[in-house]
Amino acid sequence: MAKIGVLGPKGRVGSFLVANGCIPVDVNIANKKELEIASLDDYDVVINCAAITDVDSCQHPEGKTTQDYLNAVMVNSRALDYIRSSFSGRLIHISTDYVFKGDKGPYIENDKRDPVNDYGWTKLGGEINLETYPEDLETVIVRTTGLYGSERDFGYYVWSRLNGGYDVPASKELCGNQTYIPHFCEALMFLAHVEEME
Picture 1 (cartoon, rainbow, N blue to C red):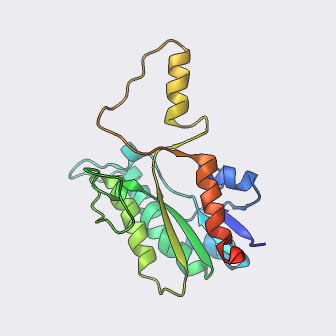
Picture 2 (cartoon, rainbow, N blue to C red; picture 1 turned 30 degrees about the horizontal axis):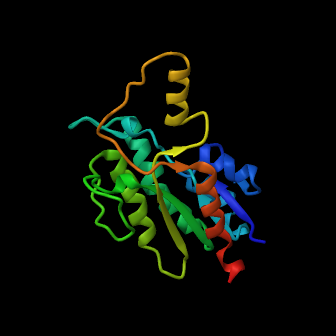
């Protein structure tokens, strides 16, 4: 049975994976020394769930760079180089549909990536970092959108607002195929164990 480490073990996806048998690797992925001390090569597979995902905080006004934006660049882009250079096994990295322009869909793996906001650009930077490594370092990039199934998501927010008798302010410009966290984690575990099934 593969030994699976999870970076970002306290988030919605990471905590679900840990609750289902994966091993938490609770380090700051933007700190190369911490990753080296974590001995990632002790794992057969590492699933990277760590990211800055607050889309609004990743934006930076034109002509002004914010600390939130710099953190997003570091965690979502640069840290992927740190992870991949610290681990020689199968790396499963969670990315996002925000790497696409968003004017059509559903998208497929090879569609042109063309983000429309800074968050998307930080995540695309991470994908490109991983793509620069040799193919013998097995890397799987999984893109998702609109995760739900916890008390920290839009579905829960809508339910709690309606249950309390309140209106639900929401954008009419966004649409997508929402992803149920337990199903998403089931797919990640399949990818982690795929060699054992062959």
